[in-house]
Length: 97
Image (cartoon, rainbow, N blue to C red; front, side, top):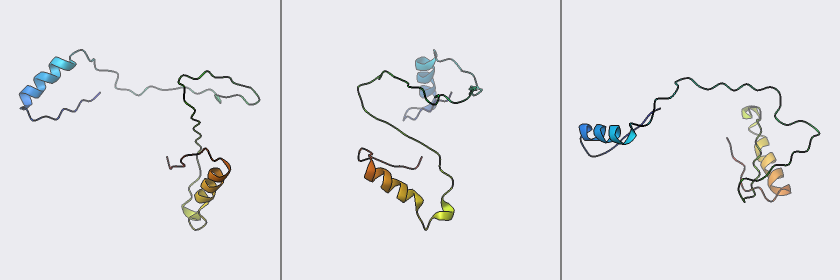
């Protein structure tokens, strides 16, 4: 865990404030947690009913595309954006992740 403090006070004053305000924060594990994935999360042919946590209507779809640098003249990403934007008028943005 890291903490950055910027202020106009002297270094001693800033250090005193940090120790006073953040002494309860413990140093956590330095390792990254490992997640074990056992096959797909969703099963084909099965209906999942999920209860909404908030009262908002957002559907976010993401997928990985191969590198499109070789096909830059054909602009396949523009074609995809056009198809999705035309057929699915509810799409508000198509962005590079």
